Image (cartoon, rainbow, N blue to C red; front, side):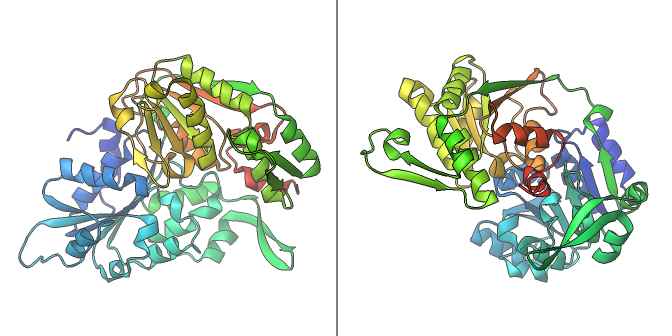
Length: 438
């Protein structure tokens, strides 16, 4: 396997460490860097924890490049049993097991592993140390640790503690906060809430991170990638959106949103809290906005190139597919690929130059390699800055040779404009929403 120069340099810089974090920009090939580090560490047992959509990719990677291992897909019960009960006394081969985050914490047998290498792909997913997945991973007893992430903090240093703990920095959370985070306590609804005001001693924190095996790498420092061009396509908000924004309640006839549905029944939207109001405003800008759906259709019909389409809600996927199928069922239905919480079907993306690949943010904004395409349509924006930044890197990565285009379908004068403005500042929109007291 041939590594790029920046990958070789990263491995050389961390050659003396058995606990490392490769915080490299998306698209710089962390899969190859991490996989090679696993090999160099030479543990008999190796556990890779990743997103569900990446399990097959990691299994294929180790099977293709590291035939000296037995590689097991631990999402399959029979293979999990073989991994846990592997007879080292009979077979000298080392083993690798790959499992997704949300299944790992349900497999308590993994807590029995000793002296193994643990690799976390997209390690930012354990930043909430109170979640079940994080608590479980922090209980594991690895000898070696490899963390991979292009966005380890999402711009928020307070989320780093659990990752640093895995790297061997045994600083308490309270001491970490006191040294590096400016915060105050707010008694919200009678409960104490820690509110982050800013950060301090940042350079000292970065030195500490490097001392504990963190290796940072930006795209511009090591590789020339094609130009990125943003295009905002503005569409009008609907009358229904304006009514809901003003009154926080709206009744929509089902016959208006579901063709063929009988008159007389209604979908009622009630924005009685800040979050439900935000949810319905986003939906009124998405699946319930015919102008946006038409603009989406126009974009699709304007090119014969591969297209990646990011969306939030299942109803958005259904509305987009419906509007295309209404035009030409035979053509479009054979061009779809889909990645969401229930499905990862990329056959058409791989094989058809004019494919349309629909990706739900939570399922596919991280980890997928989609550089066969160079155009992304954002049907609706996410609320997470990390997912937004990662989504853009699905096409802007090693082996991309074409200019990358990003089309943002945006409702004028709506909450979507506020969301994109906040995401441009590398901030989560929900965080900004509550800071403003809306």
